[in-house]
Image (cartoon, rainbow, N blue to C red; front, side):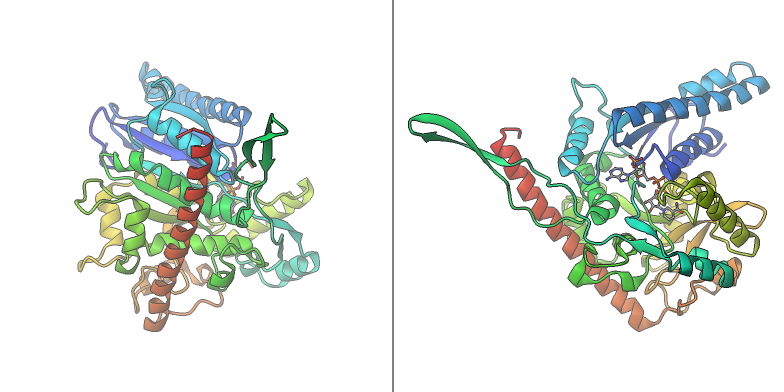
Length: 463
Ligand SMILES: NC(=O)c1ccc[n+]([C@@H]2O[C@H](COP(=O)([O-])OP(=O)(O)OC[C@H]3O[C@@H](n4cnc5c(N)ncnc54)[C@H](OP(=O)(O)O)[C@@H]3O)[C@@H](O)[C@H]2O)c1
């Protein structure tokens, strides 16, 4: 058994997963348990910090994960007596609550994890942060277009669909409570409240990217303490089209492709995080000091292919039809229809558990240039899943002009979006510029919101 993720004997690997109660989040947790126990030495342990939006969802998630672990242990016990119990002791769960569209909830969680409550629930470090939670922001399907494209253009139409209808202008609830002042009116002490003015904050943008961005920043002290070098793993999508991102409508409030806009931001953010052009913002974001005292976390990008989850809510009969269409797509050659969440979890789990040296070999070339990948969960027609580099507009497969033939040929023609073009020098330069713009805007927004939160907490005497 080869220790992975740089683990030494008696080490605990601590992984935080957002949106752990459902779909891919839950599948990532079960797959982490399975693969960790299979590949890591018996003396190593796994701590899963699971976030959901309520206490009930957290308890239910832990119960289901414990049941999964017990089943695994029973199987092991049958093969060798005592082995099951041993396995069970190696995994522990820490349920937490987090709403990504509420910055006070993000701060509360980060403080709890950093400072602990009476010294409890306070991990010494976090090694891997899996930014999975998200929402679609769709209102329904354009049925005539759905039926037409599914019947005439499979599997392309169910890999890069044009028929989802997006909600527009959805905003988060106000972040801060009204400010209150005490005043003397006619000699009496009166408390007056007034609503604060807050800049608009897109709900899909905040749930999918910005809330996670704030969370990783707040957790930077714990990530910085990881002995093996922390990883921040983003969950993106095949639908991260470059046309969906408009810097004049960064949060996609006027967009009919707000989900795709958030996934494009995710791609650009993660893939450009090690380019020299974005360094000033990345260093500030992770509070990296010039003396290199803190080891900076690394960002990784993944996507789950396409699987049936609650992210798109359909009546039962339509859900079955959708699942049927996904399987047909796989059988006629789509490598991206992982269909089940467990198979869709293969790429993010691999990024969480692979050794740092393997990832470095894949993502940095001999000259030290960043060759970061978008690591997707892929599948063959027999249902065997694997991890595959995925093409990104303006970045290609690894940010190198002229490269990609080997990845392309390994996947078959169904792996490629119809409008994809080979990477040119000009597009590569545009991508780097986009990286600078995205990082600058995310940092501007972060600092603006932190100032507002600090002011509120100072007024409320919480700092
Ligand atoms: N399914 C696919 O084919 C597919 C394809 C590409 C990418 N993805 C990505 O995979 C990730 C997981 O999606 P899924 O398919 O597993 O969907 P899902 O089953 O709907 O799970 C989404 C999870 O995110 C949580 N969540 C939503 N809004 C949140 C918020 N404001 N704060 C905290 N948690 C929030 C949900 O919590 P509640 O249960 O409380 O709502 C749920 O746990 C998403 O980032 C999605 O974009 C999925």
